[in-house]
Image (cartoon, rainbow, N blue to C red; front, side, top):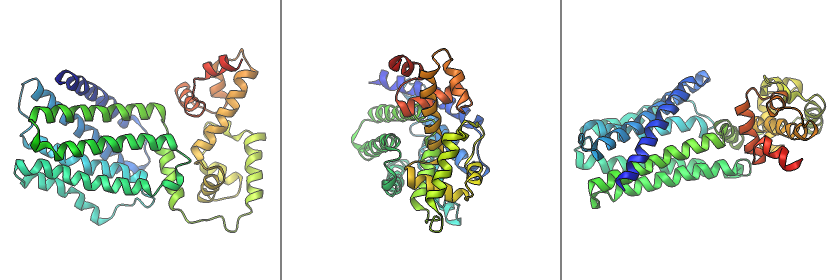
Length: 333
């Protein structure tokens, strides 16, 4: 078991570095800067804990009983909260009471070690209940992202296992606790990596689903049939989706709606968000071209339907079709 734990620790550290670099290089809207910072703190916190575990398992130092370990532990749940609230809450403006989420750090400073560790997991259970309640509120949107919800469910299951481990900690040998916790953190990093590879646009999809779940209808005085006909013409006849720079705002102007109205229309009529709606049209056209133009390269087809890079095209194609473009061409030739 120690060897397995060391392997998971090594994977966590390598993946953590890559995720930090990716987070720093990713373009973010200004209002998501707090979420980005929270994501960085979450990754740093988890990798920091794994570094402490590595030192203990290699008999280099006893970080388990240190203040640094306690503070890292207390930072996980608040960091996750501030990162995920931008995705899971429709009105995600910060309020003055959000400052109370810093309280765990104060507890970590003043509580004796024997109380600090179980109390950290008790606080984590409160955040886990918040997550369960928030995701449950999206149940009406589950048709739009079933597999994405399965991925979120995997993270939820890992979090539950971590809490159970924390609550039975007094009954375990410290080494066994560290081994179990290291493996669970490694599984969380593995699940995160797999989710980002399988659903590269998961954050946009979930955010759109949240807005759709809580938004009041803005289509009461709209002639939906006329707008839908115009939208179909823009997609099928004009192939507006081939524009790499196509945005919700640009498409809304074409059909004389506000961005909010168009977003709601796509959500209600097609059971998907704007991003997936455009990707679906691009992939449908790519499927046709792959068979109609057998001599054209896969990359040229991906670029012609509106994707900016080969990786984006391949990820979207696998997400919607379930196989790579080249495999699809060979299978249906």
